[in-house]
Each structure stands twice: as structure tokens, then as C-alpha cells.
Amino acid sequence: MIDDKILNFFKNCRDSYISGEEFSERLGISRTAVWKHIEKLRSEGYEIIASPHLGYKLLSVPDRLTELELKWQLKAEIIGKKIYSYEEVGSTNDLARQLGISGEKEGSVIIAEHQAKGRGRLGRKWVSPRGKGACFSVILRPDILPREVSLVTLFSALSVVKTIREMINLPAFIRWPNDIMVNARKLCGILTELDGETDKINFVVVGIGININTKRELLPPGATSVSAEKGSEVSRLEFVKAILINLDRYYRIFKRGKVEEILGEYKKLSTVLDRRVQINYHNRLISGHAVDVDKEGALIVRLDSGFNERVLAGDVVLLR
Ligand code: BT5
Picture 1 (cartoon, rainbow, N blue to C red):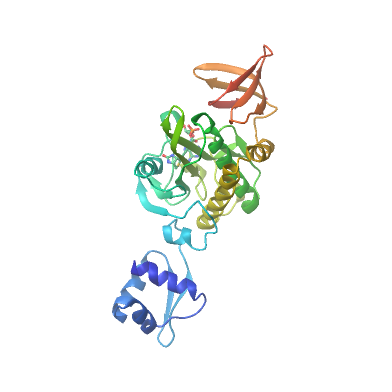
Picture 2: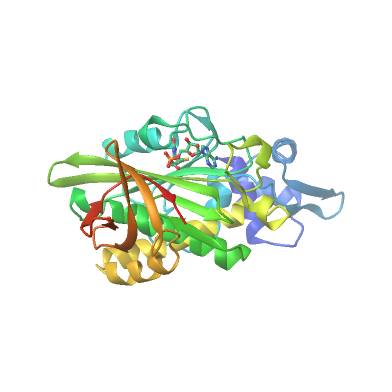
């Protein structure tokens, strides 16, 4: 708590020195205690210089995904009002689910530097080398039917793709339903899980895993990261904040019922539309032409027989 207060104090007086005496008065602790807290912050990667006459000055913050840094001037209305940050968890989706069951408000974010049991769909593993990428989950309580939940994956993917394009300038696309691809390699995966009954949603957890400054050697074959594509590292903090802001924007559009607007943008960034695809759907191989994504987020595939099939989930392979 004191550390947070010191940091907030520093940040509110950007670029100026704050004396040990001032800290001590404002925080109600001794100057030695102030010094100890400053040392602790330094050990966490905060660059703080000390001058005998002027006091302390914050030069830079570490690129760590902490609650305090993520929340700092985060201009979002729903997403990130509350952020729970951890060094290591099993899976952020599991923590989010527990919070959701205990009545956590929508918009809360659970983020970790490392996941010991990161999950993909169908029990697959999600690899997240420590401190290099981002893995986080967001609790949402949209007023939709369970069959519309795919739309949550869809606008979340759109938020990530938009951020990659706007901030990093990389040609990111969405491989329906949940993969973000850059140069035909997977950079981000999304796992949306639902808690509810047949006709009612209690809450949705959107889990997002992104490779940011991760070396390709540490990732599964076919994966890539922002730094591998860009050729240099980026601030994970700024990147994740930008995703949260876009997620907030698209979620608000979604809540206003503007699904068409989201679908319009989504379709332009899809790798699968207008392509011949093969999909493993409920242990059945479907081949055909991907022609549309409908209002519930399902992929419409024109089969070779001429019939259209509505596909709700699956792994898409692009044929040519
Ligand atoms: C996904 O599943 O792509 C969803 C991944 C969601 C991860 C987030 S992280 C935060 C939250 N907490 C969790 O526990 N999960 C979510 P799927 O489409 O099933 O893809 C899984 C496959 O992607 C694996 O079988 C690997 O082939 C590949 N993969 C695993 N780790 C990867 C990585 N870091 N980058 C790219 N591909 C990866």
C-alpha cells in the first residue's frame, strides 16, 4: 500500500524531485522507512534516483503487468475498473471463473506474468513464457443468449487485431474463430468460457494469451510474437493497456446491440472468408468455401454439395 502511494505520488509530480521529508509527512512514516520503500521499488525494477538536496525522482517504470501500472490513466469505462495482477497462477481463466461465481462485477481483469496451467480449447495447452507475453482474463456479464456467446470471442479478437495494426503496424488477421495471425503464424489465442444455464448467461470469461516479446524458440511450431515480427521489443504495458481500451470500446458497441458494425469490421480482417477451408467439426471433416460469418458468430461454409453448413466451432485449415 505504501509502495502504491509512493508511486502515485511520483507519477502525479512527473519529472520533479520529491524530498524524503515530503514523503515522510504525507505518508506518516519516518524518512528511513521512506528510503526502505524506495529501495524495495528499485529492486522491483523502478529506476529512482536520489539527490542529497533535492530528494527522489522516478526515471522509469519496469515493463511489468501490475495492477498499479495497468490502471494508471487507463481510459476505459468498463474494462479494468478492477485489475488483479499476479506473478504466477494456474490459469487466469480459472481465477476469473471463481471471481465470477462470487459475484465479481463485469470488467474485472485477472492478469499474470506466468501461467503454470494455461489452457487452450478442448484441453489443449497454452504456452506462456514468464514475463514475455501477456495472459489475462476479463469477466463480462453481457445480456445475451448462450448461443450468441461466440460474438464475445469475435469482438475480443477484433480488439486485439485493431491494437496490433494501430500500435505496431503489423498485418494482423483473424483466423475464425479465435486465432490472431500475423504472416500466417499464430500470435494470440482467445478462450471464451461461459457460466450459465440453457437459456441464460451468468457471466462470460474471455481469456486472451498474446506473445509479445517472446522468442520464437520458446513457442510451439507455427507461433510468432510481436517482437519476432517487428524486429524489436515493445512495451508490454502500453500494448496491453491499448488492448484493454479497444476491448472496452468494442464491448460498449456490442452492448448497444451494434453487432452488424462489429461484423462489418471483423469480416474485412478475416483470413478464412472467401477461402476454401477444411474444418474438424464434432469429429467430422467439413470441406467447402467459407462464405460468411452470421449474426451469432457462426461460420457459414458452402459445401461441395452446394448446401450451406453453419459451423459453431472448430479448427480451420485454409486449403488454398
Ligand atoms: C487458444 O486455444 O488459442 C486459446 C488460448 C487462450 C489462452 C489464454 S491465456 C489467458 C487465459 N487463461 C488460460 O488458461 N487460457 C487463456 P486453441 O485454439 O485450442 O489453441 C491451442 C493451440 O495453440 C495449442 O495446441 C498449440 O498448438 C498452440 N499454442 C500454444 N501456446 C501458444 C502460444 N503461446 N502461441 C501460439 N500458439 C500456441
